[in-house]
Image (cartoon, rainbow, N blue to C red; front, side, top):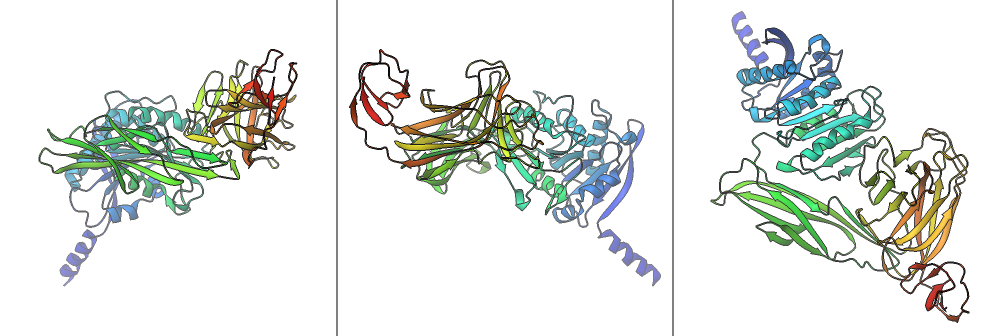
Length: 591
């Protein structure tokens, strides 16, 4: 009877999930690890290897990641290895060989699927994860560093396959600074052939502190993802309904080493598009889009590729050979999702794989106002629709991860006139070299102003100019021709720190007339002095109505004063030699 009870108890234990400390000899050294195995695992299941931080251990990492419930549901094995002296070899092969041995051991013991092995790590373990990207990309299907990257600089070896990456990091990390994350990711974004502009999701999964940025798809359909944790420090984040381990698995589980999905990504335009029209109906030219598409590297011989374009669910075009270009045409106001679906098939017509790229296009027709500073919501970025120049470097939004130069600040002093601002500087003082510009032709936003009267509102400050430095504001055609210009001297100097209190920023305003319906750009120029600066705090354009009647008025052939425009709405220099019909103060004048 006792033997039967013991046998039943052993059978019960065999069906339970288990976590145990085990050892393996690698290079003559006994190495230790903890392995967590769900009950009823089955064969050909995935493996996740998760490495601890410096001066931590496998048991601590297991407690922080909290992956067991996910592993139980998705049926994958998790290994938490112990580093020697609680650290990792992030420059050589000692721990790379340890990971190789762990994979072999898990294949032998649990029959895991070699094509679905994933590597993650926290802090120094994250640095080791980046190291492994160049060392064993043929063994790891996707990588998930947490709060760690190579602090001496990141490289992506040319012979490495495109690899999927999800990086999680707190913006208040005081051990491994968040400011270096973007530089580390950029090396792999470029290597993977991902779009330079990310898809940005704020309040990710309802969590106010999480911004998720996705660059992709790139070659072989891979993506690079940044999980940006606002206010979080040097730890693994598991609150507000979002757990880091869950997100790592959700991302990694989409990838395997033997994927046969084709590559498709928009190359023209890249990222989303935003058409804003004030004062009338949208007058946009037909849009032509282009994608780069290719068969997967491991596609069977004789495979064929087809790209199908859709506007939402409506078929636009089908292309069976490069160039994969499609004319979308004009779009009604609203939000449109242009999709390109790449389908790879074998010579017999059976499916190899499929992948999709999306291009969001928003068309707005406004009769009141447009606040184009509302996109100032991401520290260290140049926002969508904006571009900046400091005379040495030009930055086009959306781009992020900047810790120096022109970028968005969040002001956190006890008193401040605005919470967010776009900082701009002029490094060498060259004329017109320092500026922030909205709706430049290089950005993703087109601002069309109909003929009419407008008002510009702005709240500006200097960043570090105690004696104050003037700002020149211009309304320009896309070729740079100025149609209106105002000079404004800020009344507030922030004092060179986003944590300073500041007040007294005057609300500036001026009126201007538009005589030609066309795309325009709005530019804020610093003074033409070395290290002159400005901060755009708030800015908006209001449509005030149609132009007042233009009256014919004769003027003597003398030097005109004030702002003068030609009949195309372009500003001209008022000199005594000026002759012909011009516009001044809303009136047609013969000089």
